[in-house]
Structure formats: structure tokens, C-alpha cells
Length: 276
Image (cartoon, rainbow, N blue to C red):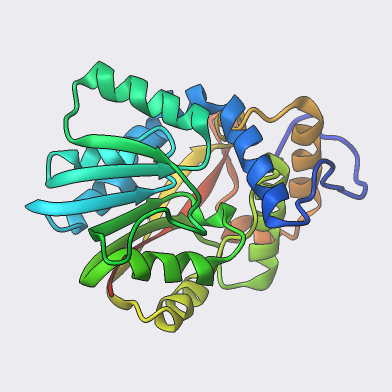
């Protein structure tokens, strides 16, 4: 049902590099995103997704404010916010992603956006240096969410706004486990996607007060989703076996289904606005 000619049942092992330290993870992230930077630059989901529209709508629009976009990737969030604030700084760990962002910035003639290489775990900016912070589709790659959120609160001015978008998993543990395994097979730099309840607790622990919280649901074509991450044939076969062996309930809770001969699934994301 999920994939014609799927491999027979058997154990699914996630082969490849398993990060054992923050340095290992950083290298893995840079390798994964460095080789796929152009794919993210041209990805319609990243450039035009409903989650980007909602985040842009929800964030304050004020020509006097400075905004930091953490894990900016190829700059789509930075570009979307550029016309609404005084200045945008886009930060990313991977130079190839920043190179694509710079190229797109020049191509589009976007003003008052600059890009900086740096780590979300140790932001290279003074305390209370930004009025706004955004981070979209990245924290599931971070090694330490509490540390990341402490860095966000540090660089925000008192009362500053933090806007977050990130993939999240169902509250059901079996459904969450299925999606986590799927994501790690797709992208070895995936660390962990928090459930909605876990994000709420993380915000509270960091002293960030939730102003707005919603779920964004995007139906994605599985093959296209794998293509963006550059997934090879071996891992694709592992993914087909994983889905074939999973419980029907866990598969259904993640929205996996066939439509017009294509396997699709429901990408679930949290869209949150918090205040420091």
C-alpha cells in the first residue's frame, strides 16, 4: 500500500554517522546542509510555505526594530521580514547555505539584510542586542534546546519577541517514534523534534511567555521531501520498510497515505510567538 515493490520485512537500521558530541553534530549538520544548499534555496516549501506566511504575519512590523534570524539557511525568513523591520541579521552554521542566501539577496535586491556565520548554541552577539528573534524549521537539528532558548532570551531586549516554527510530532509516543525514525533516516543531522507539550514546557522553563500558539499542517510528497535532503537509494529502501512495518495507527496519525499514485504525509509544525 505504501510503496509498490517494497522490500520484505526486516530490521531497519539507520546507518551512517551518529553524532557523539556537539562538534560531531556541527560537522554533520554542515556536511548535510552544505551539499544540499541549492536544493533549499529553490525549495518552494521553504520559500513560500504557509508557516512562513503565518510567522511573518504574527511577528511585529516596525521600522525601528532589529531582528535576528537564527539558522537562517538560505535566507527565506530573513527576506520575508526584511521589509517590515529596520535591519535583519541572518545567522547560520553552514557557509554554503550563507553563500546561497547572499546570492539570493543580491538577485532580489533586498536591502538591510546581512548574514553571519555562527552557532545557535553560542550566539556571537551582545546581550539584549535584538528586539526580535526568529528561528524556522531548525531546532530539531539542535543538540540542546534549553541552551538554545537561553541564548534567545539573552540576546533579546526585555519584552522582545521570539517567533518559532519547527516540526513537531504527535503526542502519541508510537506515532512520535515513527516520525523520529523516518526523519533520522532522511537526514542524519536530525536530533529530536519536540511534541507540542514539550515545547510549551521548554518555553516556560526559559522564561518565555507564550503569546500565540498554533499547528501548521502541510501535506508533503514523500519522494520530493527525500529529494530535498538528497536521500540515496539505500536509505529510501529503509524508509519504505519502516513504513511497511509500522502500526497502521502510527502511520495514520502522521498522515501517511497514497494520493494519485504518490505517497504523501502530513508535516506537522508548531508556530509560536513568545515574549521574553
